Image 1 (spheres, helix red, strand yellow):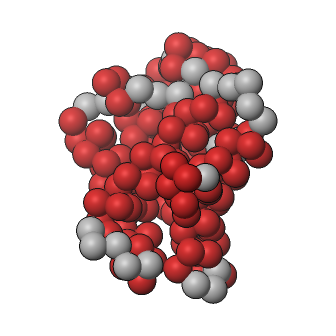
Image 2 (tube, one colour; image 1 turned 30 degrees about the vertical axis):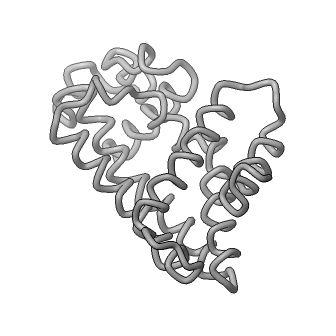
Length: 179
């Protein structure tokens, strides 16, 4: 229960104040634990983030997978893939992990995050094959790049409405630059 409370506090801190807000004293204050107790659960901020990713990323992936499973054809699956990821941007779990820069994580943590993203990209390969892409794996990675760019645009609070960003990302995914 304490570990879950620490992770929840970490999500809140990251979501509210970004990387600088995630400190062990702040975690201790949010959870009512002694600062030394926080170190019993996590050895570093990177370890906190690594566990957040390990806990939260499978939930996001399952939500994307469920949205794709509910879609009928391959184009609908691509649209569901894009829309579901972008709908998660406002989720506190997502904002927390986005707040951490990869440079702050050790190599092992970065590799786990890359592998998790690779699993997400792998979900869309079959739909892209069905759409006739000659290189569906490459197309999937490029599609994820479009999604990542849209995520960053929404996270930055761009001038465009998040809905408009989502529609532009879906249009780009399905029709390229022709819109």
